[in-house]
Image (tube, rainbow, N blue to C red; front, side, top):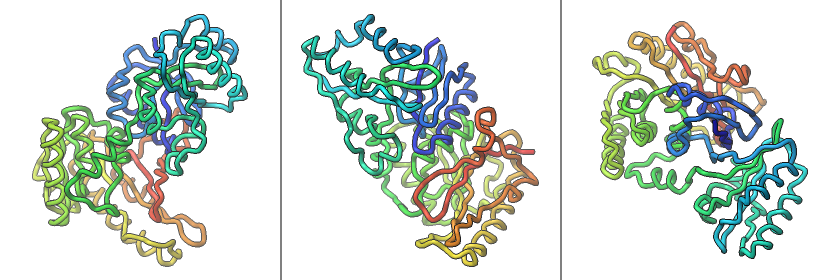
Length: 399
């Protein structure tokens, strides 16, 4: 049974839920050994780590654990015994990472590796991030290598991204897989059609796909598909897709994007964009089948400033009517399909947060918290994107 440490993204609770749903949905046997705010330790004999890194949207790194011990000194003795770094290249860069509970022996570890490389006469450059970029510092704590740095310093190929995890025990391992921000940015920016202020982020799109429980070769429906962001990422994960978009121009943009995407990545997956109204979803789909839903629907008008409560209330009331009608019609065509959907919330100038309650779907659907065993208060999940409209993520099943 191998142990792996998953470094969680900025929205750590959401990232953790995504991992749990993904593994359970694929009947992958696993055990949670330890859980801290920024990382979770999982043991499994059949964990497809490369595919996990490819498919997940909220995981930053996957680390294979090599040793564990009661304290840092015990770990260092095991590193010495196993001659862990003797075989490394003569010239390399390396980084030290510390996750979990607070570490008090970081200086000791820095001296240990510096002395060890010196004894072995290797030109090893310790890459200690002095100050991470503002955007990345939100995703990963200081003194840990960021994904950009992992790739620019060649740390995975060199097997030199050393990781320590402090929970009930102390663990040591090497980063074997890492999120590649360049690849995601490329897929985002190369799309021929863009609607920057109205499009879901590709990272959140991937999380919603995995939370929906859809599997490879099944069919995912996005009833509010916009320019096709969720559909594109689903195809990238080997999933067939159907999208519905009310606006004729936007549906055309989605078709252009998915056509260009398939031409480049050759996923072999089927896709269809229907220009129609999801308020009449049964009629719009015309009997087409699907296995799950992932969607970010219309969240209200674009807001450029913090609203007063009396300004926000009419917006939320209108959205409430829209969503209630949608879920009622959706209930006619769903049975066992799971729904991963974003519902909006607005923070007002007086500090109050107005959000849609479960009554917009509760007559027809029930909410499901996949990590209730670990955190019963975590649901609905927050997505902490910088925006005047806050996002609450629900998982729903038919009553």
